[in-house]
Amino acid sequence: MKNVMLILVDQMRGDTLGAMGHPHVKTPYLDTLMNQNTVSFTNAYSTCPTCVPARASLLSGMSPQKNGRVGYQDGVPWEFTDTIAEVFRDHGFQTAVIGKMHSYPIRKHFGFEIMKLHDGYLEYHRKSDVPYYEHQRVSDDYVSFLIDKYGVSADVTNNGIEGNSWITSPWNYDENDHPTNWVVNETLETLTKRDRTRPFFVMPSFVRPHPPFDAPQKYFDMYDPNTDYDYYEEDNWADKEKTEQYGSIVDSMFGCKDKDLRNKAMRGYFATITHLDHQISRLITFLKDEGIYEDTLILFTSDHGEMLFEHGLYRKALPYEGSANVPLFIRVGKNMQEIQTRRSDTVTALNDIMPTLLDFVGIDIPKHVDGISLRDHILNNQAIDRDYVHGEHEYGEYSNHFIVSKEYKYIWFSQTGREQLFDMKHDKNELIDLVKQESHDNILQEYRQILISELEGREEGFTDGKTLIVGQKQSAILQQPGYKK
Image 1 (cartoon, rainbow, N blue to C red):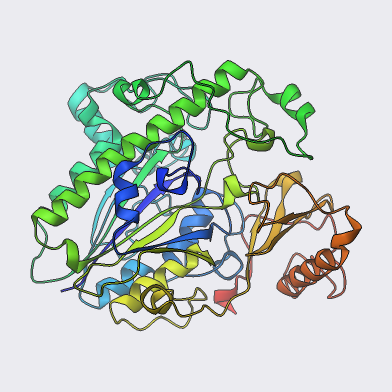
Image 2 (tube, helix red, strand yellow; image 1 turned 180 degrees about the vertical axis):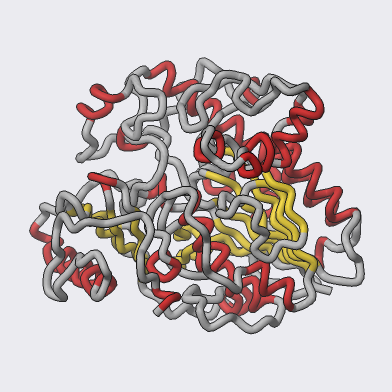
């Protein structure tokens, strides 16, 4: 009996794993998982890197322009069908999600037979004008748990940290009641009480390391407060004036101008990741204790990354590696097949997850899915027929599109016309913008033409087929997404 566990975290950079050579963060259990019958993808991308559109892509198996979510907007129903959980359920799997969905309607299960929900702090579902049954203090299972244990005044906001800020503070309740622990506790209870006549598809979905950076104190203590955690090299294009101008705003996309506060935030971010790592180890131990570890396919990824002050930027929605590049690795149970543990530079995206997992257990991939199965590449190192991925995000003045391959990344900001070009082979950290270097004019034109081809026929009118058109009106939701055509 083949089981599937999809471990999803939130806002974790692709480089923040010890096994990836990060100079500070400690992830011993994830590192172990990455090095045992596992393929890790170093060029994995969130092609619309904020929570709602990234999760729509992952759960639907469709790219942003096909599922219609090309930016962040709450409160709009997800209308697509045949989600990953629906397909697994319809083929006999018991399906469960524990933790974050960030979908709408908020309690719609989208194929998950069991749902224990915690979406973190959601401003949209805190407003006084939402129906009472949608308010987070009613609809969120974890918030209800906190209230039941600590009283009606208990809340995820009680330690005073804003949910998108760079402020840090250790967890203020019992460690075992932290949302990261809660996801594992509820996942283990669900698996213990599962229907053992059926295989399972379970998705433990963690809110962290998305802010608030509030790991239990002992995880802060693992990171020396006197260490300088700024590990970035100097680039030739960051706008330092923007950080100076806006860097006192706690959730500014331009980061923080106070070096001490930046350092505290990085320490808090790393502490939150190590806390996650230790809790995820409990999931692995359970599978081993149950005797099903080698019968279970385990996929680990994040919905998007975090700029974490790189290039003077913070948060996500941007086309740079910190925001768009995510960790992605797949551990194959040895009873399925023993494989060569390795890293792959194949360019992948979140919409590849659904076809990959279905293909592994012998389920036909629905026709609407435009992701690519990575199964044969993982098992047999078969080449993937893809040269690049196209990403985008509606983001006001900073609305952007990107084309990324193993070799280069081309970026176009659709409201200003600004272009950037980076050498992904030799400059993965995007330190040198090549867009004004004549030696790369041909590459720039080639990648610009690829984007023109990707955008032909789009309702926003981004191109006439020959050039890119700047300043077109756009929205986070397409009126005519690909799946409706």
